[in-house]
Length: 276
Image 1 (cartoon, rainbow, N blue to C red):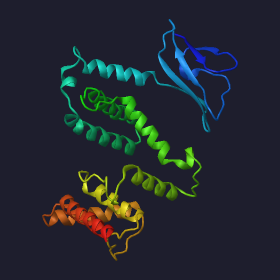
Image 2: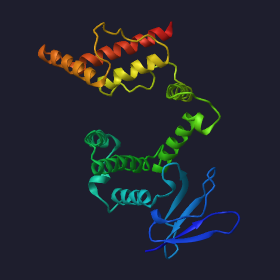
Image 3: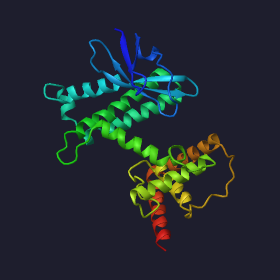
């Protein structure tokens, strides 16, 4: 099936292009400052999905078709609606949490293995979780939202948190970008304490890492560093952590519980320091 592309210009009139596939289309020259919107209209002239043409430094002009994102929303809606799948209809935000964790771990494994096919599949499974939760959210009687609302929130957030790209703020390094991100995030959410918003339900190691990161960015004290000298590289750090865990197991201690308790004590110490 061939497709007709309608490129929208005020002047001159729209230009029509035909191509067997959206990715093979060659739209007219574009304005790099304000890329035009292109509509994919397959016969019999029914609007299927919007396309955006934009400049890319490494790939030239790129045509992005979103018909499969729309298709996924339609599939999810059918599964969830009356006459669809009983299992899908029974699921809740709470019942799906374990699958979100599982799919995230599987994607991590695919990245570490370098398997591109698995990466594509596992990213799709994570995307399914976003669509599934959003479809469930549509049914909420008090505060419903859609997957488009979810996309709007994250797009607005990216624009707000990157004033050096979308505004006139100047930065000199990635460190400046991260500092701006944390400052803007804290202002937007009205957070009073440096550790506000850090989820304590996450595993102990990322919890401790996040708390220390927040402390550093807010110029608070951080845990004392051991005087033991080890090479400054990931492999050496990994061996040291593994050795410490082995020591804990040998002595009947749970390293997860131990680190969690220490991390929460550090969080409380951050609160006391900020309250002075």
